[in-house]
Length: 474
Image (cartoon, rainbow, N blue to C red; front, side):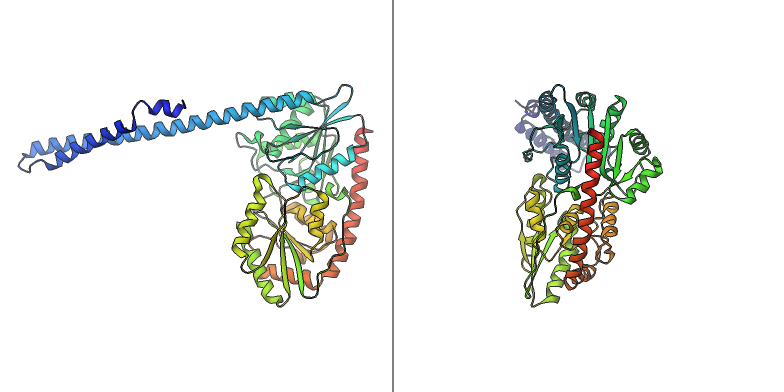
């Protein structure tokens, strides 16, 4: 029998109702007493009525507080059970990792949540490590029951630790730690009590501290910071981690300025590691009477001005027909598909909208981006992948998160296209329309620029990744 039922069985529902009925009956009787009562008698009766009502209110409050406490304890019990199961799973996974005589490497990042930018950064790191047969490689994953790990050869997987005291055990198991890409230098959640259970920025600090204290090697590849950090405890710990790292590489110059202010001369620049993946481009062109636009958004609420602009854009280019293809890049608990469904329900009467199926295939997602005249993306890697295929991209700065600004500014600098940047999700619709008109009317020029710059960035990323991995493990 559940805890709640055991406690509530002390008084049945009928007994509680009966007590309340008796209380109300007494109050009704007191109210109906004849007015001929003397002043003293009436005062005494009123006092009795007030006392009864007070007791009833206090009893109701006690019952409500007891119910709230029961609910809290049940939640705690459920959380504790989930943590115990998670820890058991992690222990079993850890036991399977590590082959004797091989260098045991743990790769950590925002992996396992089906965020495609992070999944492709992992793919890029594993591609470069695959030639080293002496490495025993494990990838640290988030808890996500819907995630199906890609079928990489000879790769182990282990899930995040839920207990802070398990971090030393994790570190003890491995010899080398790689943090492979992402906007993971962010103090937003560091002071939250349970941040070590889910926040990759906090996890990076925790693992690095234990690893470096144990004399183990740490390498940080293609990271970026939030544009503003203020938690002094996090900042001090980050500075120590940077100074003790074997390699610390950032993917944008704005993040480098921030890290240089903490540890001068330690950090170096590299291209985003996704650029080290093969370019998959096609020569797409819509017909004279139509235009195809790929769209990546973070959530339905933040996309209102964008889709209001799409309606206005369709009216302005009529009779040319616009096809909008919503491209999902984040599949944790079907996040994108659910949000995209809401968008289609709201705007489907005004716009021709197709929701693409989620795929974690690199070839598949590049195919989605390359089949459009241009793409509009609130996600950083949506822009990167679009441009890698030679397809113009309109970056929309998702300014609700502090870790978007630095990396998006780097894209604008790399491709020299400030006129296409939408600097906030809340920009007026006419501003979106202006960017879309530019991307359509000067499509060939933007295609040539995307193709030329992406070719240079990809070549540079391949050289950088090969050099840093070879330097670490040769």
